[in-house]
Length: 119
Figure 1 (spheres, helix red, strand yellow):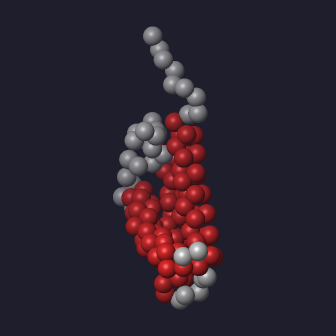
Figure 2 (cartoon, one colour; figure 1 turned 135 degrees about the vertical axis):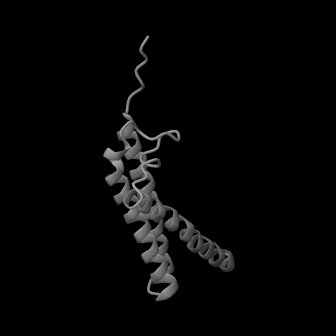
Figure 3 (tube, rainbow, N blue to C red; figure 1 turned 120 degrees about the vertical axis):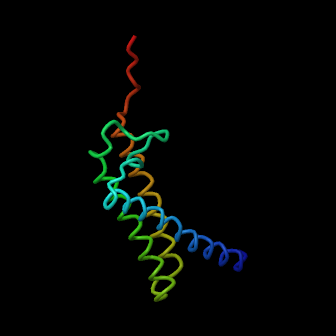
């Protein structure tokens, strides 16, 4: 194992968490404060028919994901409180859970089946 390349990869991954956390927290801010529902439960770039109905769920998903990533960044960069394996595991699980939860919400909001074609 080449140790310097692992070290560089860890730093790149850690620094990549900053824009991801910012993006998720910005989406939560837009939903909570600005009442902008244009990015709620998107499927193929389009919001559902009633995005306000799914906004609280999207808010919680983005807020929790962003908050966990910010806590990981503060713990690693500020306090050096987490070992490399620990913060990578926490960040990785958070990324995957947020993506899967947002995907599930968008499918729930748009329906799981094929669209009905009326002729």
